[in-house]
Amino acid sequence: MFALDPSSTQHPAADHVPDPAPVPALAPAPAAPRLVARAGQLSRPTAPIAPEASNEDVHRLFSEQPLLETLAVVADDRPLGLINRQRFMEQYARPFARDVFGRRSCMVFTDTAPMVVAAGLPIDQLVQQALASGNRVLKDGFITVEEGRYAGIGTGHALMAAMSDIEADKTRQLMASIDYASLIQRSHLVESDRVLASQLADHGLLWEPRDVVGGDAYFFRATQQGLLGCMFDCTGHGVPGAFMTLIALSFLEQAVAPAGAGIDPGALLGQMNRYIKRVLQQRHRDAQPAWGAPAAPAAGLPAEKTSSDGLDAALFLQSPCGTQLRFASARLDLLVAPPGVQEAAQVQIHAGDKLGVGYATTPDDAAWSTQVLEVAPGSLLMVATDGVIDQLGGPRQIAHGRKRLARFLHEQRDRPAAQACAEFRQAFAQWQGTQRRRDDVSLLVWRNQPMAPSAGQEGQA
Image (cartoon, rainbow, N blue to C red; front, top):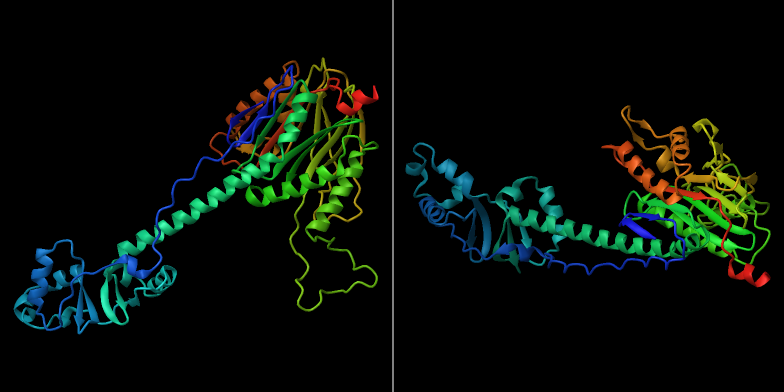
């Protein structure tokens, strides 16, 4: 088994049982930069000027200090205003301005209503005040005070840099959390990887979350009745979809016992439906409260959940000899290419039921049919999620569709399943082209062959 890239997993065929691929460890995160927390961290103790100073004094200061953008006017340690360099120099350069205003007080060109904040003001409150003042703070900056006494000047550029650093840190923390969530999601798939490698000698599995984590997942277990497999596609993608996969995987872990008997795929989907609806508090929208139950939530309790989340799933039980498949599905299809099939039209498409699992609109007692299929030895089988079917691409920028998938399966019918899966990955990338990936993509290809005996089956033998 090998990983094609950090966001995709593909399992090649194997003549022996390899060790399951370890869940990759996260690289140490780079040290976070020291973020600005208070307004005083953005200000510099720039020397102020007294209100008695003349405009000629201001002009001389700006000329001698080309990097000085703003000058504070302070009297008795109390800020009176700010003089903006660009605005002052433009007005002072006008005809006769120097003769008229040169000896007059600098208060003539002073903004007497600048933004003045305490040095200890939290940065988020500073940002709110700056936004409320419009563009003034970005152009002129702001004054910081300590107990009402002048402390320094903060520039608009420094404030923008601090805001950028804060947003970058939020993004860094978010991505670190999502990366860790990916480890959790992948850890739930390790046992299924091991079962696939040991029970299906000829298989290929493509699992590509659209984002770091995704709403597609898979589950495989060896049972007394044969290999149980489930491919499912949950509502959404990214973090919400990943949470849904953990709910579904938790149910399957509890419901499927390797030594259990009497497994019925359709009944298992019905149990999953009730489990998801109970966990997510999603009642059927048309359902009436049971007799004696309150029609509305009691005071102080949250109202009924209004979202509708669930999943599409294909669940199969392949007999130990590999020639019989018990198949139940919610909206996902099973494609079968028997050996010797001559035309793509002869590829069998076994459609799933049209009802999704777990949704608020799905009745609690919804049932999914179990199809019992006799599959010729050496057939090539495929299950794909709708991220494959619905992806736009090709010359006409249309959906990939099932027929194109059936043609591909026909073309690959004589190749090993792992090779067919690798070919599909390349062909699908070419089909997508420059189009944005719409959804998570998962695809299982396998050739029905007798299973390796499980520990329980060996004991019975």
